[in-house]
Image (cartoon, one colour):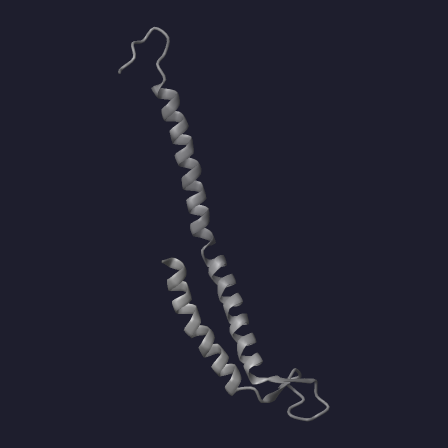
Length: 107
C-alpha cells in the first residue's frame, strides 16, 4: 500500500517536473560576476532555464536540511542525555531489586 501511495504522489510530480522542463528549454545566460553587468567579457555560463530552476530547488533543499539538522541539535542532545539517564536508572533498579543473601524473595 505504501508503494502504491508513493507511486501515486511521485508520478504526477515527475510529470509536472517534465512539463516545466519542456516549457523552459530555452538557454539563459548566468552571470557569475555581479559587478560586470551584462557585458560579454564578464564571467558567464549559458544553460537551459529548467536546469537553473532545478539546481536552485536542490540547493534550497540541501540548505534547508542543513539548517533543520543544526537547529534540532539541542533536541537530539536532550534525548541522548535522557536515554543515558534512563539506562542508569534501569541499572540501579536492577541492582536494588536483586535479593540479598539471607532475605526471602518477594515473589
